Length: 199
Image (cartoon, rainbow, N blue to C red):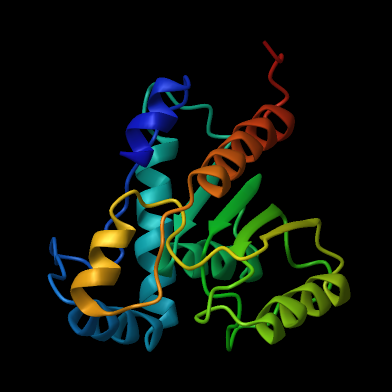
């Protein structure tokens, strides 16, 4: 749905399966297992991302000099790590993604401008992770914009989050205001980094 919204906004959108082989998790424990398998192999994650980026760049509708990546939860962590690794991206946007990583950005390495949207009451992304990212990005001389929504929990962009929270007793909750504001911020960010005229 998010890719469709990006396409509706006039961009070419590519939804990447980071787990491979069309894996779908029906239970949070399975999703966690998939995520741990992927994060345990950072070079494989990077290889998948780079392969997808090449497909995207070579599409007839794409200006290969203007590419951004966004991700949600695990995907948010992935796009941040791709920025940390110095991939040639204009921007990355993380929505309720993990902000801690064994991969640390080095000064001058990050090419992408970075936007992070996080929930102030997200137990999966505690305040020390937020502070750690700010420190890391300052030391790496990266262009970071971080928005923390007070009282907002994990998965705030997902309208189905409340049902999952009830089913699996997890601290998740959709927040319409945070979802809308983060989306509007992302669209403004893309206009800016891609040098597009505003409406």
